[in-house]
Amino acid sequence: MSEVKSGTAASGKRKGIIMTLAGASCWGLSGSVGQYLFSVENMDSRWLVPVRLGAAGIILLLFCFIRFGKEQTLSPWKDRKKARTLLVYGIAGVSACQFLYFLTIQLSNAAMGTVLQDLAPVFILGYTCLTGRRGPRIFEIISIGLALLGVFLLTTHGAAGTLAIPRSALVSGILSAVCVMVYNVVSPKLTRSVPVVIVQGWAFVMGGVLFSLIFRIWSIRYVPGPKGILGIIFVVVIGNIAAFSLYITGVSLIGPSKAILYSFAEPVTAALVSAFVLGTKYTVFDLAGFLCIFAMLWMITFSSKMAGGESLRPAAAGTGRGKKKRMAGAGSRP
Image 1 (spheres, helix red, strand yellow):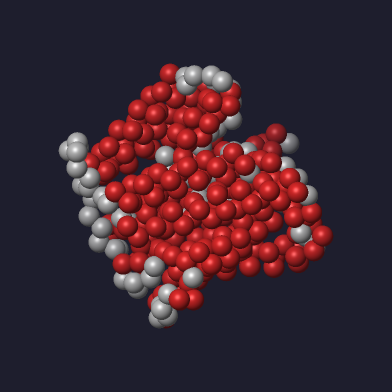
Image 2 (cartoon, helix red, strand yellow):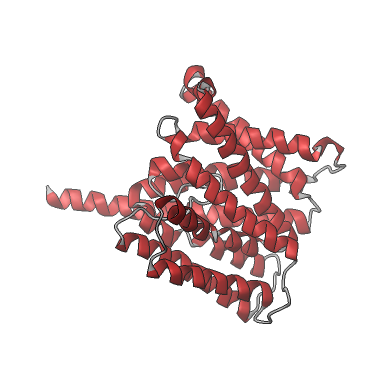
């Protein structure tokens, strides 16, 4: 009997690893497709993001109405407190994160956008220390140092006083990480009582409507060609819906701490596709910067495990990287 349980557990672990890798890779591919749409198809992030959010939101909400029914799907709006939280989560967190992420890609490249967004744990750590009224632990201090070093190498290539990427890309990338922190902090207030897919659906729809109005996308004279349309379908279906589903399922099977290790497939995939398919050039300083930020992610996870606490690693881009109910609410990563 114990052998059967052991075999089932091993099978579940393998499945979880595969699904986590697949989900993270889907986000990486989505970022690279976004880079292609901006650099080759001349698409604008102000046009793509509202379309992407709106399409994904409509698909998810249609599923929710069928799966959960009208009453449960509309439930977040029937409670004022939940409605206010959903507005903050959907607009200041999920939607702003997605726009800033794709803006960073448009201004630099997919790997840079992904890696800068991966600075989110530093902001989550800062929030945790402030609300917990404690100072950072030694491992956390080291992780912050690694993050700063990584950003320095990526943005200056080791030459202080100069920037290797546009200043606007650095600002938008860091702000996208702040938005990841926002939706990770806010999400538990919603996902304890509302299914994650419902929260995500409303968040995406709100973002699609808001950014459509802000950027007046009907005034942007752009008509995508066949490749552009395929790219949009890819970032909606693969980058949002498939990535979210695969990653959340993987987290539920292997746990958030292990999932973090395999989530590195996201920036690695983005970097490889950008380099070998889109022709993006990377330097030794870029590679060193990537490694520093990967090490930072590992250090934050390790320090949290040593302290017996929950991992501070953010939900991916769309996904959830933490306890399934809590962190899944952040399934909005690129």
